[in-house]
Image (cartoon, rainbow over all chains, first blue to last red; front, side):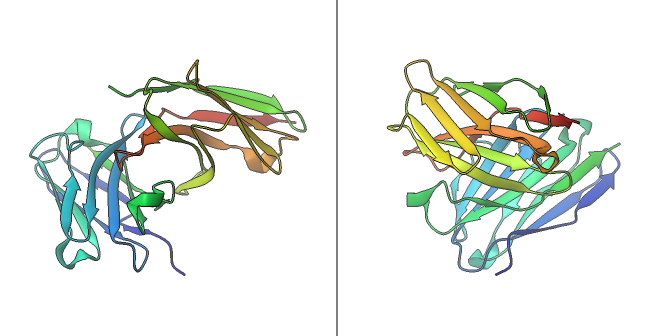
Amino acid sequence: EAGVTQFPSHSVIEKGQTVTLRCDPISGHDNLYWYRRVMGKEIKFLLHFVKESKQDESGMPNNRFLAERTGGTYSTLKVQPAELEDSGVYFCASSQGTALIYEQYFGPGTRLTVT
Amino acid sequence: GEDVEQSLFLSVREGDSSVINCTYTDSSSTYLYWYKQEPGAGLQLLTYIFSNMDMKQDQRLTVLLNKKDKHLSLRIADTQTGDSAIYFCAESSSSASKIIFGSGTRLSIRP
């Protein structure tokens, strides 16, 4: 069974440009989460989808970030326009049900570098 | 708000035991976790413990929880070079789906 996949693995863009990150969860997982680790600090929660609906987006830093999950399968996270402080590693995770929330499976992450 | 703290670095000799410590602030934490991240890889759930438990052992791993002091530790017995990684302490409550992570402890093994 394939795990959580993320694309691209690494993206380098200039300040002011737009970047779209993609996450494909494990097949059948209704729950999808985005996290990010900035400057080697703690990994911070961004948002949580249940199918195509945003269940909790309390961690989204500002309106430059837009997450979508049309059709309830894969998800995209768009940063527009990117700023220097957006550099970091963006992780996606998925789980089958929130009752067993320790079962969040993480992808390898996308390393975003904004120059 | 919720906060998880852990030291940034730990260096141990191969074959010795490694102990990584963590403190958290959320008294409503229900689940506490240890994740491992190897270079170039994603986060791997190593082990978890429910807040009503004091200890959990799984092969070379021992997790100790002191709920009164909000202190969690991970002991790796007979540390091997393959244990080199960043270890993240994390917690979540039953009322929230998000996981709160610490900054990670980089474990390095010396011969």
